[in-house]
Image (cartoon, rainbow, N blue to C red; front, side, top):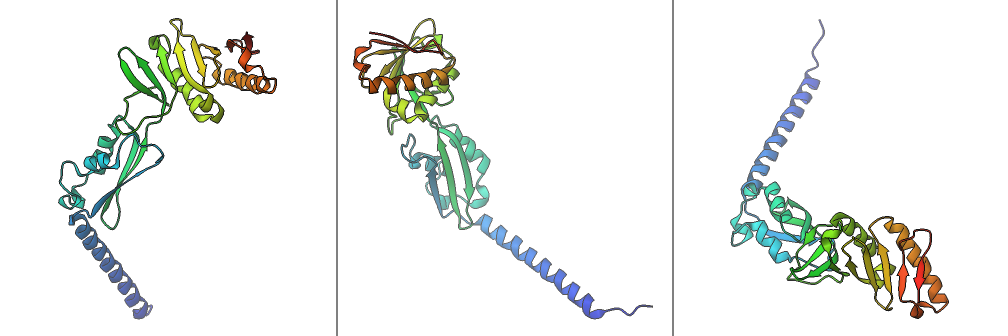
Length: 244
């Protein structure tokens, strides 16, 4: 019969007791932390250059009609519900809400990106980078191309894609300031510095057309010909047709 190693048994018992003690301490600390009030709220924006919604407006959504963060207990916070509430705002694309260990209720907000502004008899609104309607912000205005004409003649998702290309390209963003949608869905664009009309055509082969336009523009600048043109036709993807 083997002789028991009481020393090893005692070490194992001590380890189990220590583990149980730590688990109890963690549970007590967690419970105590959950029952205490929030200390503060904090809002950060992923793209802080231009704000279409204020941190104050997001804070009001976070504390849900309470007068101050201290009126809200940590265990009363429904993070999923708060995220849905913030995401429902017309200016917000997505949010992430969490509570830090020191009792701060933090919201990280990604705003929608307006890429064009529609103007017409029925009012004005933005198109975001997904082609969805986005209301104008009372906080600040976006410097984006203006769209007029028959919006129903064009696919809004394709328009969002088109003007996202303009927004993401430094050259196009500086040069394209407006567009008119014709009843047949064809698009006429306006350059910031020159009076010619850009016949873009329908929302097909869009990147190829923009590449053609940029190549044409660079060559025309070298040859000092841009002031001579009245019309730049990009409908033919293998060539750019110009009219003087």
